[in-house]
Image (cartoon, rainbow, N blue to C red; front, side):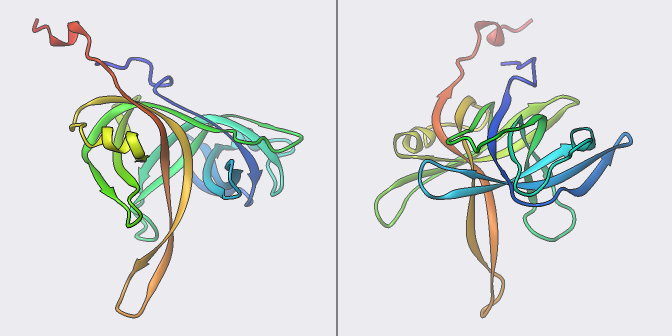
Length: 216
């Protein structure tokens, strides 16, 4: 299936409180981009801290400061980290629009992805018997680029993910979450790291169009 509109296959809406000052990240065609962390609530008492990437154009005027309440729409993107510091894959919400709000919005963290399974999903059960599946989704972007988004499914969605194959076109709806974990770096040392992933609420396979099966 050919996804023509790349702005429609990766959509994020997220709201929360700015948790760090914007720091310079990189420059593209003389446009500077900055990153900051956004603290966003779940329905439970747990909170996620998500990396945000924003153009300098959105920082003009009053800018963005720690403690500001904001609502963001954009895309969840990935890029390779060549610094050898931190995770190999950097995941960030790329801002398409941002606005300040008076109060923090509850449960405003949603993502829609339409992409392709690029690694065989890994299904497992926890020691408490909970079903989990790890999914890596390739989402097309313009200029022949793709974003590689790790997703985690639970329960029935996890069992369904186990049946998926590499190349399957799927739609995923859910939320972006952060997760702390410990990585062993020696026999005596462990390092705390943060993983970013999509927690899957809905998972469905996109049926192939009949036209896709025609050989011209």
